[in-house]
Image (cartoon, rainbow, N blue to C red):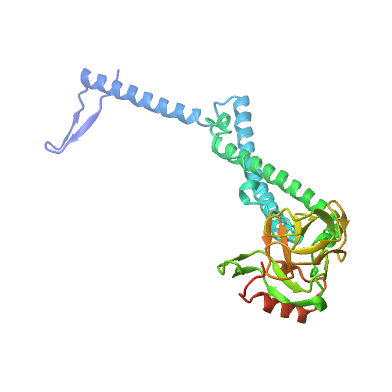
Length: 325
């Protein structure tokens, strides 16, 4: 027999029994069932997201994944350190080693070329940690590319270092006519007045006036590539290939003292001043070419001029006068 429950009636100031109908019973049962289902589902979700219901294999996999994430994080930190080291080596390579050995610097684009356009990491997409994995693999690829380029650059620098003595002997560093034999420096490198057209145009060499027959000297070691009058305007002229991208040219000669293919050393007499070709008087037109680009010869006269002589030559070469050819 179920117990009778009472409630206090404030109007009659007495206790009255609580009457429970069948409808109340059904409502209570439904509420109980719904609460049980809600509590059961909530508990199941909590358990599924914890390690309580996981198998030992699943727990081991989760631990392995967390360990991999940790290892990737450590790897990325080490990559940052390596990138800083490689960047420092690249900077010294471009601004120290390659400058010292007169080699062209390697552009940034060349050091990192080959990583644009095609998506080479598509097979790594679609995973929970794809961004982390792709970023790490990409950084490794770029670092590998930089290391390969830098290794080749250092091989080139090593080759240049071994040939440094030959380079020093080859660079055209002396004046092609001795100061005592000069009448004057007629014209320097830059814009000058053309003696024939009277128009201001670029003069790609230096004109040294001297008496006909004055000796002309090789300014560096090399091989005579031309000794002829087959180039328009130069008359009888000589071209010496010094290697390392350097060529020196001597024009308007009266005669040669060397032949094509002959090896010469700095200071050898290679020819004599004349007035052949497009010229208004006896003089030597002298040019230096580096990597197919004509450059100012004045920057190379440190082999046989005193500071005072060089200063005087510098002052004369800056005058925008009329050239001799």
